[in-house]
Length: 567
Image (cartoon, rainbow, N blue to C red; front, side):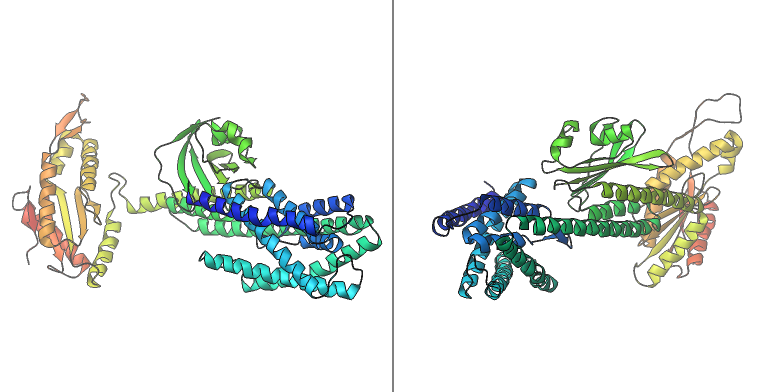
């Protein structure tokens, strides 16, 4: 049995010894002579409704159930108050996901509320409070003390509990001030409710109870409106952050992380649309990305496949609503699902699925905001893709797809600056030229020559050392920038490269003759090497030195060889 289960079982034993046993004792010793069953029924109903539809502050429910339990205490004593409070707590558990974590919380809250009620009731009687009394000032003082002791004990017990667990206290200074300030709301309301019950009777539930819930509903609607506005603001900020990114991977990663935070999602699944099927591109689970093998979902298959087929978003509040559509084993704790198509210009680019371990975690307003956020993402992704393509066109050789001269020159200055600042000790340049390349073009045609240049570029690219840079210098010349390579190491690398090229067989189709059949061609290369700071400490001089080594030391010496620069 796991440690968590042992903990829950131990807490259950403590709960059983304290709460049910304590309530049975109170029912035997503190029960009033007569109870109005209609009053008791309304107390329980109002208590349960108050717990199920709370006011929230900073996303956390505010406990104001005492507006019901305190009049019940004043009318009938501690035993009836206990029944109303405990049934309210139990009702909250049954509308939540009934798992081990919430079961643990049920026992803990039940024990806590039992102890708080006992402590507050004791204080009430100490200051002279009497059950069923109609004396205003006696009641006022007793109720004030009851509420103060209840709040103070609650804060003290919670802080002690978290200290024992070596965890951070849930109460900030603002939380403590807020808890005590609710006296202004709870005391007058509870006392008025009780006094009206004494004078008016059952009609008080109509005069006080229903206006109270109408007020709570208005507050909740206002809070929801404020929450939606906050969602929209945060979505706008996320969209702005994505719009300035120029890397596709960064856009996607940031979008998933921020979306998970905004909607408090435990899982995020991003699918790429390939027309009739989906590829699972990213999976984000509990604040980390999961590396996945290639996974596909067919159109109409599972939740994501159905959204692709219908091109309409879906929301599921609990597991049993969507489990029938699942085609593979799913996460055991997953309950709520929000899934939308990512569309732009009437084209579905992908599917986004959010999952939560909480029931009813997503609402219609979140769907609209997620749809807005998805639009930001698709536009930002296309912009990043366009920028990358434009940057590649400006930095890359169109034929070989290697870096061009302009990029090589900028990179050379950058690496030289790094060496001069001491980040690297050496910087070498390896310049390579194809021998007798004009003869290749004259014999087989320029297209065949281009095919050889492209094939050679792939060889050079594959041989590129880590942290190095390879580019086409011009014509049939190529340049390696090798940070951290001494001249001796660079010469060794160049020699291996020369032999690799000499041994490779290129297959081309000549375009000068009428017969279009494959021909095998071999080439050789001449290579020049120069290094800094051995040969120079200036970027362009380093490039010129490698060029001199290539033509004087290798070309003029007979070709198909490596030469290093000599002063």
